[in-house]
Amino acid sequence: MPEDAQSSQNVPRLEEPVFTDKLKGGVIIFVVAALLFLSTFYVSSPTVPRVLSILVAVVAIGVAAGLVPVRAPQDFYGGLALVLMGTFALIASAELPGQRGFAFGPGTAPRLFAGVLAILGGLVALTGVLMDGPRIEQYKIRGPFLVLLGIALFAALIRPFGLIIATYLAFLVSITGSREMRWIESVIAAAAMTLGCVLLFVYLLNLPFQLWPQSNAPQLLFNQFADIFKTTFLIVRKFIPGL
Image 1 (tube, rainbow, N blue to C red):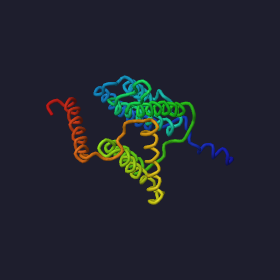
Image 2 (cartoon, rainbow, N blue to C red):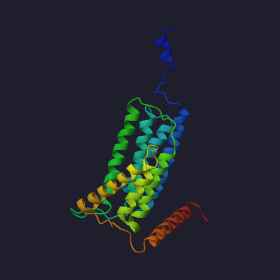
Image 3 (tube, rainbow, N blue to C red):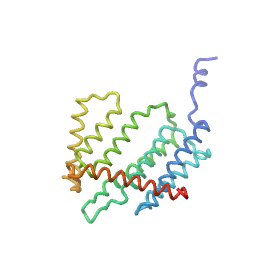
Image 4 (cartoon, one colour):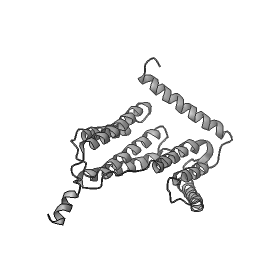
């Protein structure tokens, strides 16, 4: 048998993904979208994130049922993950005041960036349906975990400890997810990133961010975690009667 014929038989057919992979991916995406949908009932502006979560859940059902062709799993699931991240950001920033006339409010930039992220994620997922591409390869959880930890750290520190400390620490934690990290370069890059955020959000966009820690910063941080625990307990209590 000719070598080219043998090689053509060994090439994986990307247009026919394994059904079990599609089922697993669809179920995971559906569960995350369902959780985001339930969380929209606890915010004051639920329309956009609720619609996005419903659309992603419908797509996930189509994937699990084999109705949506996934020709490029890496692009498709990555794009849906971006849509879910944008939806989560819209929910998290729903209580922040928006734009008033020509003045940006604290919630304007987060909602704007979240909307752009969701749109770009939808386009990336669409390319995963229309075009052939690579499958999802094995990955390590260390990098994504540290990036998400940096984001959570920024969200927790921004109000009690101010923009400068929150941005600097969040960048350092996130960059440790890379094995190519060098401490001297990272410290300088974190300082440059922090300076850029201060110039952009405080001086250029004139957003009311506090730069330095408040006098009762540790107490405010503790109160934030206490409020999160109470809210989580109330949500779980509604779904588990008698708790």
